[in-house]
Image (cartoon, rainbow, N blue to C red):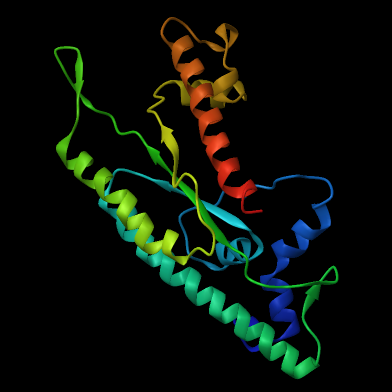
Length: 220
């Protein structure tokens, strides 16, 4: 649906559906997270247009690096289109388009990225770095800076929020037990070294959360 670009009321209302949803629950929640797939379709556009911040998960592959440029191009284009649509609506209706009496604008800012640890080779019981992965990992910060941080109007304290380790069998245990990984216990099938993995995951999530809050609260 492209009518939102030309200031059509129904088009703007549809595109800003999630903005309307957030306005309705803003007094009930401090933070609302949307977990979206790797797509630049209309659904994700609508969610991002309603959001204040976004986080990017990065894998150790070339496709993640290439996707950053596409994300940057799309976000900049959506921002221009939304502003154009709002300006056209103002011109046609002689009033601002509002949701819950609030004037609408594009407020999205990049809040940081998270990397996924790759599975390293083990030689004589010692994990060895994989050069191909390491070369890509070294390119992530500068590529993120170029395509995402450069578009921000805010300064980030921590651009990299953290790294998620390879959790192997903990993931299916978490899914089958219907509990988050950091709450897995012996009754869920945790044995031996898995207990340390659960503790490490809890620490990792707390560090990521702390870094994220540092970025968004200081700029809220």
